Image 1 (cartoon, rainbow, N blue to C red):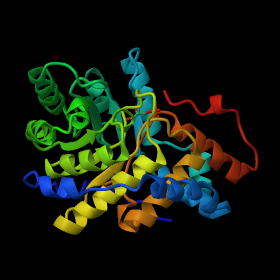
Image 2 (cartoon, rainbow, N blue to C red):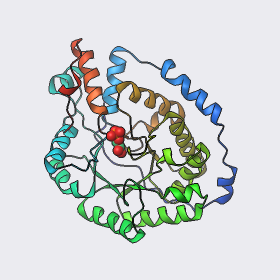
Image 3 (cartoon, helix red, strand yellow):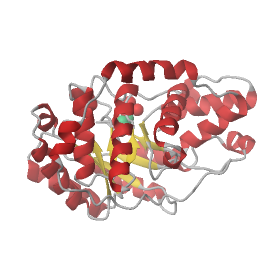
Image 4 (cartoon, rainbow, N blue to C red):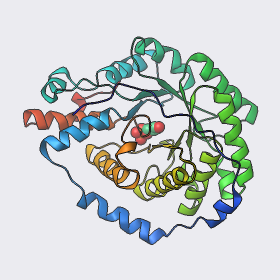
Length: 321
Ligand SMILES: O=C[C@H](O)COP(=O)(O)O
């Protein structure tokens, strides 16, 4: 299996004027979505060398993340070393792969140590922004935060949206907010975090996804990892279908990033199966799909170790940072 080392993201999403009629037409059949997702984990399973190949692919799609109040430059440097060489050398050699993660995702103050630790690699630094995770700081502060992170060298900006605009059905306010954030990003790619666990309904998730894409988001992302409910398959399905509809209407491919609580190799395989079925193999690339995850890589490495050696090691033998 070959792994692209090309970190080029897709062409920017120019966005569209807000289309209120499109939003009004959006309907989500929740029981049907839940039935479809419930059948996935049991139905889709790959084994042996195919599983190892899919897991190696998953590694290349991870935004390796640390978003803790006690992050230090040392922890970020160790995380970046893991991003550069995500698999133990003997495991990578046994699989015949040479790979790295898609990006490293940190808070603003950790951009500089991350850039230093990733120098000479194609791995971009993503910064969470706009008052992450709640997004309730003054609007001017949130804008300034984006500008500061782009100036510091972040190539990708993960913003959080104002959940109240969704809960109140104030789509023009959400559109204007995301549009302004997009402009502040300049050349950096914009990922919009919907915090789906706080949006109430799948219909809200579908509408918020479309509004963010109309406003110019390059990626839509499920969660911050800090909500009580983070990435779920039903939410993922609804967001993937919104991406499909947007692509059908505009020809523009938007990326998808499930994040929060995705921590096992098995989870990763189910997400990739859903992605392949809903959006096709064209989305199986770091340009269009990312896992936002702080601990997933450890379990993937553990499963690959089992595939290569026949034995499982303790999870603590695969530290992230
Ligand atoms: O954006 C990434 C998430 O914050 C990571 O969440 P996690 O720590 O549950 O993997």
